[in-house]
Amino acid sequence: MSDETNNEVTEMETTMETEASTPELDLSSPEVKKMMESMVADQLAQMKENMNKMSKQRDDAMKKAVELEEAAKAAKLEKLEAEGKTSEALQMKLDEALARVEALNGVNTQLTRDHTVDRILGDHQFRNATAKEMAKSQIIQELKQDAEGAWVHATGASLSEFVQAFAKDEENAFLFKPKQSTGAAAMQQVGSDGQVPKSNKPITEMSFEDFLREDSSRPSNDFGF
Image 1 (cartoon, one colour):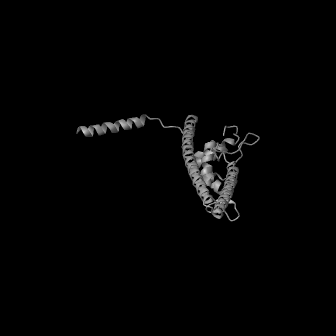
Image 2 (cartoon, helix red, strand yellow):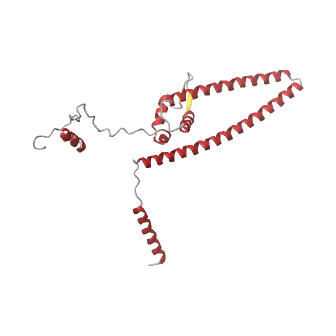
Image 3 (tube, helix red, strand yellow):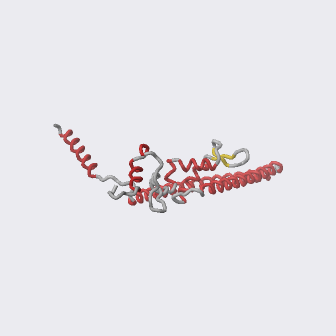
């Protein structure tokens, strides 16, 4: 057997021994859950930091563009007035005023949209403020206004329906707090007398767990059964 083959066999045996010696993680243990929660929180924090950096870069670029545009408009207006083109200068001022009004209306519309989204998102439990902002950002990108000015999903679905679907999407589960387990759904309630109520199901339709549970609730006779 060649040295290369021996090396491959040795590596395979080492891998098998490592896998066999590695204990399986109990995903239901508090330690593992805490570790997973910490990992998700770290990922959210990193994503928030990246979003903040991108937002700052975008805001700086927009601010610079606005400053250049304002400077160009001022120079053009000064030139028109210097040349005695009063009507053109007045029209330019009017256009500028109308543009400002439209911008203010746009800001008001965005504030109304954001307030509506915040109100609906308030019914859901997010991991933290960062997760909520991420969800809000994704949701807003898919909204539009209908003929009456109400905010709806691009498909025409209502905002409430869209948010509900968004919250149920497994890909977005990391944004929300995990639901607390209330125990197995098949568990029966214990009555006031401390006895488990009997099932009306025939024994042929009972699961093995149901049979044991109901059988344990039956009083034993003098012979112990």
